[in-house]
Image (cartoon, rainbow, N blue to C red; front, side, top):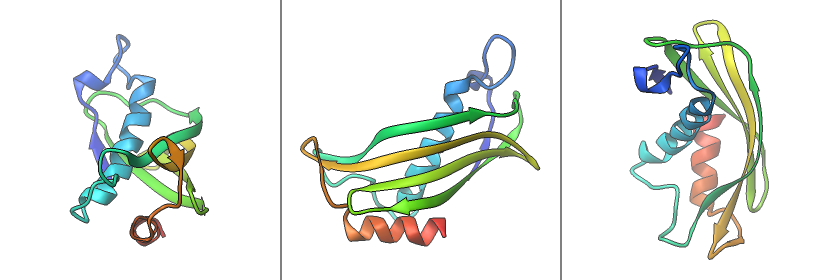
Length: 125
């Protein structure tokens, strides 16, 4: 997924504010579902939640830059998925994170619906 850096994405120094890299990755994950005319939830009580993030900030991006979010499946289990998500500016990696997502229903971990697993494996392989 491609994202342009807007003024609202930058900090006082004119570079992308660190939390926005995480937002860009969240948008890329959501977009996978939107492209299938789906939401990444099943009603009001179920969906993916973040259990863990390991993030590395590697280079800066600034106003007007075009960024690309790349996502790769590291592992899928019954109720969780681990993704490697990276933000690139041309040939330079700006950000990398490994994120563990758990599918919950009514606040408790449960099996990821098969159609959601298929969306992840189709779009991230």
